[in-house]
Image 1 (tube, rainbow, N blue to C red):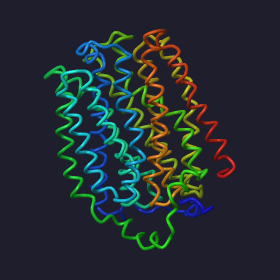
Image 2: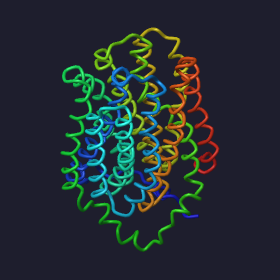
Image 3: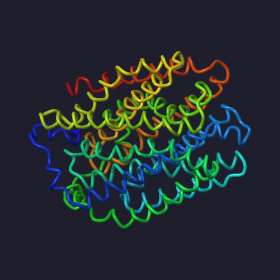
Image 4: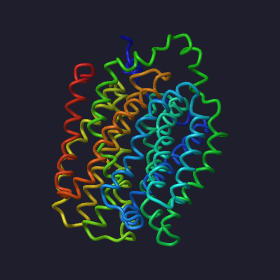
Length: 419
């Protein structure tokens, strides 16, 4: 079996200087983070407006689970398709199209007159947003050297996570000032503008020019070979188990604060930006540590895996949430959970660039994200019924266990290879 990409760099003592990266690459990075933030805002609109939408359409938590699942199922299914599209045509045209489609779907959601219409538009949104991650990771690999990916990813995270940070105050503010529909329509229109900017920015990336001839000379493994590669399966199974935490907290935390802790929509808009903001600061530190370990001689893949495993110590805190009445403490646990879940997502995606050649990165990211989202969709599809029947205690108890299980999976697949 061929050695994973990145292992050959284990002896590098110094990373590529940031000042040697062209200015155009930083412009592309800025645009991709803004597009990513806009996608997160579009995705999170139903989360912030959960209680409002339930009242508007006269539905309960079971129907809200359907709304969440309507996004997640096509999101999962289209990951692999979008990954293949990105591998074939790159990031410029595909990402432009993806952003245009999901922005249109967000506008459509804001114009919905019935709950089935809202569900349908959310499904279109999920299908289009599936292309965001493979395309942006492909663009990162093309515009930046591999030994700087974690650092660049960390630089991208603050703006990227601005979507999660801005969603509560922005969506709540628009809804309170102009009605809930504005919380969908305004971000959707903004996304169309940035799709046009991306088309003109993502041209002639330096890494693509530098590696085109070399990679053309190497036979491309097929999709079946990628699926059969054991290097993929550890991350794939770990994401299947752990992704429900990330998606649950995205879609249910605002409703939990309003319906279980008595906060208003204005309160949610005022404080719910804090957990993703704090998690960004912590994630930046862990990404810098990962790159520092590589500079000291660690294999890139080993540094990503160890960072992922180290964050699992935070997982048991999730089980305490339904027993705490203090909003500040609950928000602190939300922040640590965001940090842990986001670290797993970010590091596992970077890990694909470490383990596989550029021609397979989009497909690899698409596969693990597809499987992870399937696990999250299955969990979220039934969680509304559980909450209506027995409350939040069993839900948070299960969520506290999934990352430790994922840790065992990662250890089983990679401990011998990278120890």
